[in-house]
Amino acid sequence: MHANFIDAESSVGFLFSDVSRLMRAWFDVHARELGLTRSQWRVLVHLAPREGVNQRALAEILELDVVTLSRHVDRLEAAGLVERRRDPEDRRAWRLHMGEGSRPLLPRMRALAEQTQDAALAGLSADERERLVAMLLRIKANVSPEARTTAAAAGEAPRDATAPRAAE
Image (cartoon, rainbow, N blue to C red; front, top):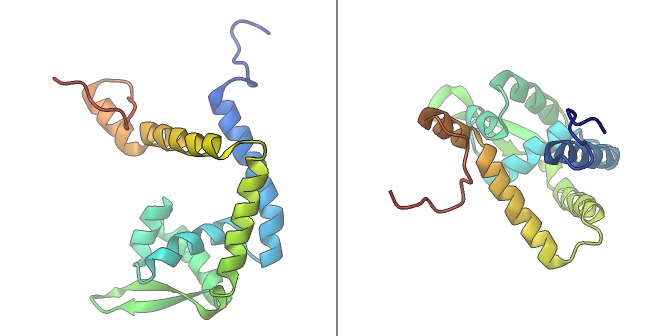
């Protein structure tokens, strides 16, 4: 290997990208059996525990622009999986609710998510799985927009957002 190149087999960034791509591909094949795209799946997963959320807030949670979310919701609504209801406090806004068609899908969606995770984590002990999740949450916090903004304002590299700060 040339000294100026990154080793894609041991680079954390490349590994994250490869694992994510492979898991998405595996998942997409199986999600199609439920008649859902990954994007529609994400909307339903984030809407289910937040029924009644307005469309703008859900777009922020999903890190999508409102127009993109609106297109997903249009398709989900046409399929009977999501309902839009007028926001009683803001007549221009919509509140989103799970549609009747989504109720029977939720257990099947959960089973598919567990299958995907189990396939990806095969060979890891329960303790290793817990540690992996904890480490991924720390990494996510480290690279979150909030961590980058805070670090940039201080003129620093992002720090471990979950680690205690040293006494100043």
